[in-house]
Image 1 (cartoon, rainbow, N blue to C red):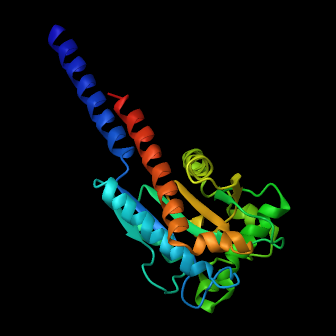
Image 2 (cartoon, rainbow, N blue to C red):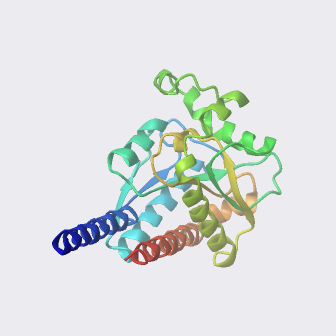
Length: 264
């Protein structure tokens, strides 16, 4: 009986250790995909002198450099590193195929009012206001650019509120983690970069739809605001915004991995 009891205890400890090892592996941030919004024949938002696709790319590349330099244990992948058009679901597929732990999509905002400025970070979810839906519609209009994009959208209509309800639950398993990262990004933008904070918001974005990991879409500013366009187009502004996103990722990584260590 003693031998049986000892064997059972040994087996339980072994299984517990194995379980902890699995949890630790699960919570390790190893791979991050950076997605520069739009590109190629899809310019995105257009300001007086600048296009969203160009600013998003420059900030994305700077963000990748910060991560590679300061977090050498993290692998960085890009959906694009130059001015090319990438179909929306190929962006998610890249992240899923490489089992990425985070997906960061960088975009630039616009508003009918030229006085609006500041940053906001979005996660996949059901829009709660008409303005949230408007932003999602603008970003999702990319599927109208070519027939292949339309074919891959599985009948999604960017102008139909009902379409957003149908796929807004797809990221529910990662909503809490996505919200946590988004909050850290906004905090860095406000406290360290000095940008106006429009907060963390939820809506249905095609580029986040099929990602199987915590994912955020970052609107780094408004090209429709002349002063903010100048800031977004400047090397200093791009450096500050990229470093703000990096610091949020670093803090999120440290927090998640400290929880992992607590499981021992």
